Image (cartoon, rainbow, N blue to C red):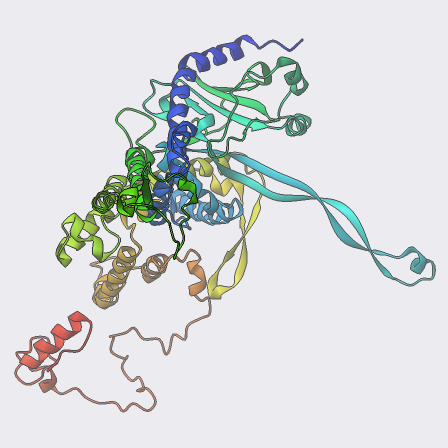
Length: 625
């Protein structure tokens, strides 16, 4: 007999079934239609209605549009900053918090690479485009593997003779591959939320169905994560039979449904794990994570009002794709009828099958052949009319899907962008829409990073060594102590959100660095007089390097000492008594060199050549004089 569920587990299951199952069934039904449209799958009934000679093309046009959109919003590398949360700090306390933020950044860079977070960004964004919602799950992962290694041991026969002879033997060792926070992309077909919830963290109940093999559950039971695994065989399956839309294969074949239910109580969040919704695999317990939230992050790049799922990009244009398929097949059918003529044979022809069709064929017929055998030619006009309608449907798909209004200059006229100014305006609007989509993704990355930050604070108990590129491009190991990570920190992706376009980021960084080099000498004099705070040149250079997607900026700095005697700031006069550089004679600048009436290089020059020269410099090239 299977073990009965506890009273708390029964309450959790009842909350799940009453608040999530019905709405989730409707959502999955719509999701399957969107998946079919994305992959270009036709219904079997629609395919059977067409005759064998009729065209049945159904190219995945939506897939091409979605992939093009993802190329503009998905970045291969996540740029972020960890900073202390704003509050009142003592001077020495803030320095400790600043060092802790730096340690978090170094640790995150290493963990994101080891966890292969960049590989999950594409499916994370793709699921949102198809379903209108995508979900990430954050938890702690300890990946321990037993793998054989070769070890050098002394040969026994050599030891008997007093000689050391090395010998290789194979032995199994425990290899800790990764121990840190991990982020998984959750299939929204297996994710549940309360149908009345408007935000995930305010949902009364949240559930996640995980499909696992019985042997994997047994292994986790031996490690102490689950219990009562053998009772699942006696319970019988009650979960849904998960089918893939593309090929009809089962996602649940030979698998066991492990249902994680998370629900809210007055004193916090609780969770329980059920096998096949009948066996209690883990007892109900309070939220094990210090951050006190559901370990899930929801992202919708096209949000809807007061609803957790947003608008699907595929859903917007699925009907247009269907109309495009229908019109395309009709046009091809008409062309096929034109190219393959139909002959009308009169009743006088006794044996129509004897009329063979090939070049140079002879048909012996009696009477007027034009009345006995004549071709029937359909009108070619309908095929020509269909072409502009197909172009309009394709353009409509691009516009409604949120892509660029045209992808070539030949399509500019169809959207009213006949001039370069109109084309630039239309492109700018499309780019701003793309920036908005990327902002939603980066906000989700920020919430993911915040949970990973607090997971590090909770589960790291021993010092950890992290490799990074330091000064002089030398690889170095940084030792991070757990106490250094404690505190109140923010995982901030705001710099990436504010300057999403790579060219804009670099232009901003170049302008900021150029302004610094122009005004730092004046600022230095003001700082010496006590009228200003000295500027940090390293920070300006770091921002400039990061704008070029350089994460390890320390390798561009050197720890070698600088010759103070020969060091001189640009634009600063040499100290009194200093020797001029070798090969360059020392001279005295004449006052006429800055006279506006005589020198064209003066700042206030009235020379026309100076104006032309400066105008050409602003354009990036010399002026034609």
